[in-house]
Image (cartoon, rainbow, N blue to C red; front, side):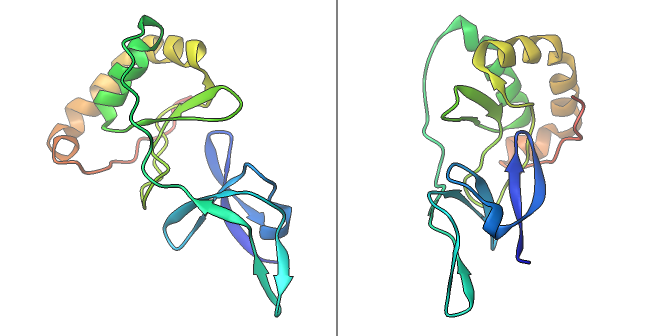
Length: 144
């Protein structure tokens, strides 16, 4: 069995590499990858067809339907990741940081979630303001 860390909706779980399917996000050597095909053995070693997840695309949208998502992103110092199933999550899957700051929800539901819990994001920022302003990624305890 070859276990790897895999993003399962809004948290990381261990999963056998041969159970990965196209679209899964998994970690190897502090990097995150998007699976593009089924794993196979080559010379006795598992090979996973995948692409490195690089910097999240920066989207500047001044859409009121995302207002509270942007506020929460500012409070935690993270981007948001949009997925192919029309869901979003406040997290940055590029590079070594894999902190997750929200559940994975459709955009309008995520905006409502962020509005309801904005006080938690603001309190987090107050506690970690200097580190966040210096670009340091800080893990947030899951509250959802």
